[in-house]
Length: 142
Ligand SMILES: [Zn+2]
Image 1 (cartoon, rainbow, N blue to C red):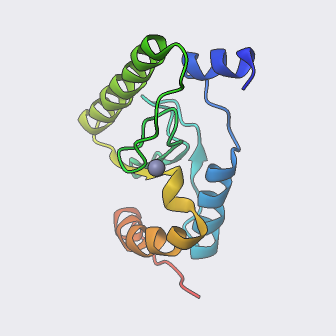
Image 2: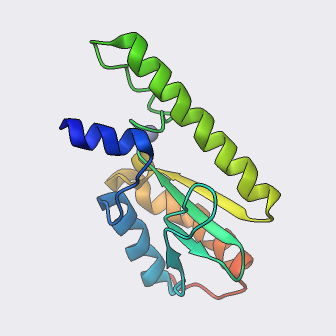
Image 3: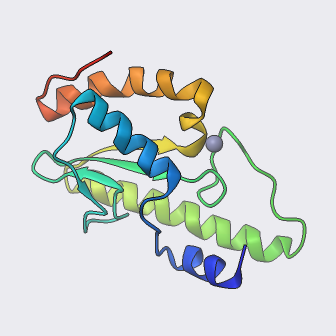
């Protein structure tokens, strides 16, 4: 990873249109759950948001956001540096989530690993009915 990429990640300047985000948006479109906005300007800048309904989805990369399921090892060098940085990321995520909920948002977190081929169907099978209900919409299954 380049220094520039690291710097951007550390600042929390999220890149948009990453592969996991595109996967999520494709599934939402297929299900007919459209009308969302991207990177809405509320805490955590949710990747996908329906502001009128205060429903949003945060798509988290397992490495930067320290996925509890993957529990990825720290980089081998500068362990102290990375552990502080990652703690900061996790703290920031937690704070954003609390702020969103305090503002009345319903927040869904999707981890990158939940979008892998063998998981993605289960992930959306669980998520779509809940989302549809919150959005007051019907969803399609094929
Ligand atoms: Zn993960």
